[in-house]
Amino acid sequence: MIRGMAYRLFLGVGIYFLAAGFVGFLALATSAEGVFDWLGSSVEWPVGYSEGVAQTSDGHYIATNQMAGRIQFYDHNWKFLWGKRIDSGGGIFKIISVKEDCFEVVTARLNNRYTVDYKGIVLSKANYPESVRYSEFGIVGHSTWVPTYLFLLPFASPSFAFFSILLGSAILVFTATVIRNRLQSGTVAVLHRRFPGL
Image 1 (spheres, helix red, strand yellow):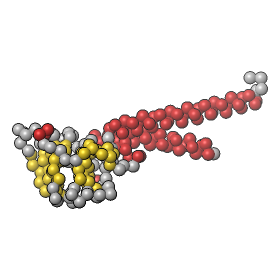
Image 2 (cartoon, rainbow, N blue to C red):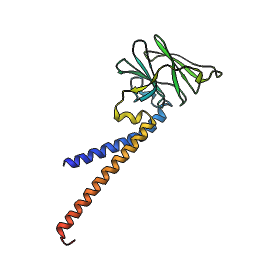
Image 3 (tube, one colour):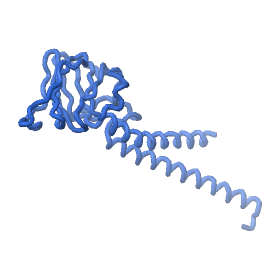
Image 4 (cartoon, rainbow, N blue to C red):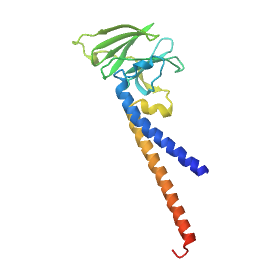
């Protein structure tokens, strides 16, 4: 009975990681295009490792998720406060300044320049001149790990989604192999008991 429960648990975990990997790929590809804007600013999107995390003067964190096209705001203990999609045209973006009550974000595509306050309200959105290159803007912040539950990592980046698919597939193959071997062993044992000469 215990073994049966363990097999079901392994199968469930394998199926979850396999499905989460595929769904994660799809969700990341569509999030940057605004498909999930209806979720609102109160829903936290998994981030995992972020290459653009800035900190305000009072210790709050601003994290970017390039793949999902989002910025998210946290308190000094990494408690999620709000999130917002940046219209980046599916491209990269970065935080270029952090001020006393707001911060600025620029996008590589569409030449968008946002000013957002610490409550998540967009104070301004404009296009910077095409003569100005994205690379000319400085960047504020650093790369760091944003606290994220393990089972949500497939939705954080394509790399995690791909790894989730591999992990789920490996778990399912391993579990199926163990179950098949046990069934074959059980069948052979029954045959030997019924037909000792085999």
